[in-house]
Structure formats: structure tokens, C-alpha cells
Length: 452
Image (cartoon, rainbow, N blue to C red; front, side, top):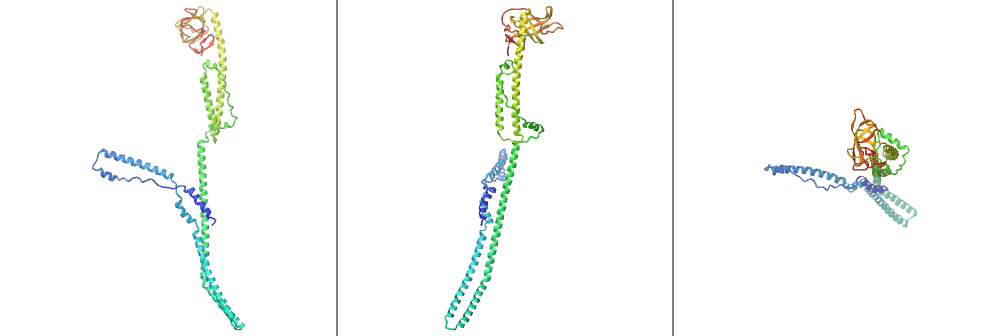
């Protein structure tokens, strides 16, 4: 009887594991449709409307079939299978109530027969007890009484033996029936225990299978979002993750000299810094995610690489700032030298560079007013004419280009410039106190300072 609790626990357990819900097909079947009937109705009508309706019907039928099939499959997937209709058969297969009932009936029948036998034997004993009492009350000799009592007892034994003999076969049959019922009951209990163990084993195996499938699915999902890089190049990169990580970069303040030199304005610099901050926030958040396999070291390497690039960028900007500072100082010194030369020389100016005939870099006296179209002679020495250049003024910037060169001659640095007409003071188109003039606006100067 101790296995009944297991039955009670097993039924809902098996129900929950294998038959969680009921299946109910609540969808009506597709409507019947007879093409023959439709053809018969349209037999006399061969218009295009008939074919249009036919095609519309076939299309609707196909679409309805597909929709119904998908809807039915979805409904079956969502519907729950009821375990209630299987419960009676399962209980009947596992229950021992019938065998126990039959055993109790067999025991009751045996007890009834034994009681009947005992009642008859007691009645016999009572009857002979009365007879023996009657003999003892008779007025006869003791020897006669003894003989009569002896005979009565022998008759009593015979009658008791006869009663036992009469009930012997029935009692034996009833006892055998009880033993048989006990054996059947024990066999049913053993079978029930075996079925329970088998069901428990099936449930355990099913759970283990589910666990294995879940672990496999988890492994697949993990590999999908946390892959293991198989590329030798990537593996080589990942091996760097065990090295000492880069330190967070130190951001240097922006230098206006970079803007003055036309290399990097403040807006661009701040835009780069903002992108760096956004990148750091994203990587910092990604590092909190428990990635595995090759993704975890990849995130770390991305952070290290970013730190390295940012650090090198800051170093580059710092070096550029130093270079700009150095070049600005050198340009200032060269400018002062050319300015001193122009001021102390009787010439109008001097050639600085003529590598580009369309853009000749010159240094002119500050007090000279130069207009569009003004021309000047180029001399190597006072009597060695090289050629002629022409000036143009755009946005207060004086430009010079070669107009004519003598055969076989070329303009060289420090060649002398003599304006064909020299005018002192300011006028429209004059250079705004600039000494060096060129088509390259980056090299145009005013009052000895660099202009962007």
C-alpha cells in the first residue's frame, strides 16, 4: 500500500512532463466546393467573367488552404493536451484495489466456512455435554456411567471428525484461494512497482535528455554570440591579450597654434575628443558583459588598441605643436632677415623662390604700393637682366608670376626686383604692410606675423 503515494505523485508529474496541455481542434474544416457544379452552372456562359471568377476562386482556395494550414498548425502548437482522458486507464493499470478486494472476499469466505464448522462442532460438544450430564444423573453404577460416557465421547469424536471431514475440502479450497489471491496481489504490487520505476526512469531520462538538449542549445547560442576565432591571424592577435594593458591616455589641451598653422581647428579637435569619449563608454559597457571564448579578449584588445591610438594621436598633436612652434620661430627670423634686406637695399624687393613660374614668392619693401598689373624687372646684378614679372592683388594678397624671361635664363632666389614704376604710400591694390608676397596664402605675412 506504500506505493499509492508514489502513484498519486507520478500521475501529475507525468502529466506535467509529457502531456502538459489539451489538444482541441476548434477550427472548422474548409468549405466543400464542387468544380463540376460550378462548371455545370457556367456551361452555357463562356464569357471572360467566368474565367476571371474561376481564377479568383482557385487563388482564394489556395490562399485559404495555406492560411488554414498555418493557423491549424499554430493552434495545435499552442493547445494543451489533457491528461485527464488517460488517467483512468493509467490508474487501472497501476491500482491494486481489485486484487485487494478479491483477497478480502476470499478471506471472508474462509472465515465464514471456519465459523460454520466451529459452530457445528460447538453444537456437537454442547449436545454431548448434555447427554453426558444426563448419564451422570442416572441412578446406575459408576462403572456403567463410565462406560456410557466413554461411548458418548467416542460418538462425539466421530461426529466432530465427520464435520471436519465435511468442511475439509471447502476449507482447503478457500485457503488455496486466499493464497492465490495473496500471490496475485503481490504480483500486481511488484508489477506496479516495476511500472512506477520504469515511469520514473523514463521521466529521469527525459529530464536528462532535456538537460543535454538545453546544454547543447546553450553551447550553440554561446558559440553564435561568443565565437572562437579559428583564423591564425586573429589567434595571433588574441595572444597579445595576456600582455600588460595600455594605460588610459592623457588628453592634452588644445593649442591655438595648430589652427594658426592651418593644421587642426578647435572644432575638429573637439569632434575627435567626443568620438573618443563615446567609444570609451561603449567599450566600458561591453566589458561588463560576461563574454566568453574569443570575444572577451577581443573587447580588451579593442580597448588597448584604442588607448594606443589615442595616446599616439595626442603625442602626434603634441609633436605637431612643437614643430609649428619651431617653424613659426624660424619663419619669423627669416622674415625679419628678408625685411631687413629689403629695407636696407636700394632694390624694390628680392626673389625668395621661383620654382613655380606662375607663383613667384617675393619679398618687397613695405612702403611700396603695388597694384594689379604692375610689372618689375628681375636682375641678377645691376646690369644682368633676367626677365620680367607681373603682380596681381587678390584679397590684399600680392601675387607674382613670370611674364618674360631672356633666352637661357631663369629666376633664382635673391635675384633683385625693380618696379617699372615705384610709388610710395598706400593706394587701391597696395599690399597691406606685407613684406613677403606669394600665391601661396599660407606664406603671406603681415607685420611679421603668420596669417592663416
